[in-house]
Length: 397
Image (cartoon, rainbow, N blue to C red; front, side, top):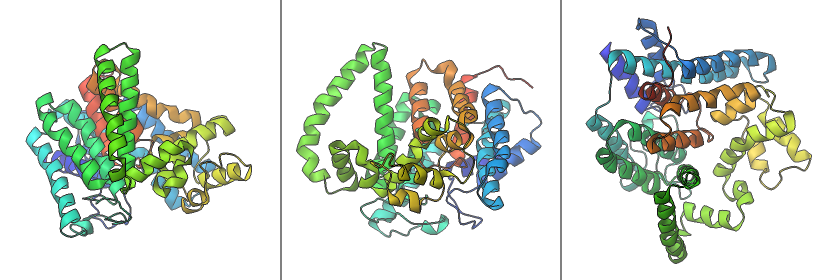
């Protein structure tokens, strides 16, 4: 069975390898091998977070009664819902029952491989190894960074954040002093992803505010020191940064935050998708919206003269369907979809008093409001690993 575990983990750590030529961003490789693990494993135990993930998947089946997509795209959406449940249970099973682990040197090697490929794309040939993924939309285009082994820079940066979540919970402080700077370097210098950078900054802000509300004096001091350094640095270095994509977006965002969707089309699509559950909750009483109704919903709001500050023709015309994870579930399933974020919370709940678990959970939740599809293998793999680490609930047969 160890060879099967190794292949499964390999595809979890390399989620975008397009070996089957399916022509999609996120590949089902890990889902296939996760299902094989569940098929051949004799000991499979469920707990509350896992049950909630499976119930969310089950509820998605009933969206066929509120579906405006083709049957093929409906099945694709159902497989997206299935992925976190299957992968989380498979991940939890191999850690719980087979004493599996990913050695630090192996994980470091994975991070270095992404770095080396990205470095080669940036300084030698933008198309190095790009044949291994479905698309190369973002390689050195319009000031964006490279893709490494991902379809676009935003996905590359987001994958680094997933690795950060995993590394914080897996390895010692000394080891993370090696891994975390390497991941930050990839996000800022190689992927140059505004989305990943924004997610990381938002997570840091939320985490710091929580610590300050707890009257953690050390974090108050850290926040004060950071602001004392960051503000003068920003003022003196803005001239150098303003030519970069991140610099331009930052400057325009500070000038008028509500114009973020018109400042950058890519961020606009992601931001509109992130707030979609809020709009549905406000205007549809948080009832299930079903599949294939996102575009018509936005157009309806726009035609009513609502939210024209950030709704724009590109968002409504170019984005046919809502993508993402938590935002997609809450939009399509409404209040029923709350089972998914509750499952995430329960996965971490027993150890949220530890800073690294709190930060990891906040980072994961912020990530799952971006355009990352539910079939992204690191979602389920990470949740299964966290459940194993925290012993969130007493396992039941």
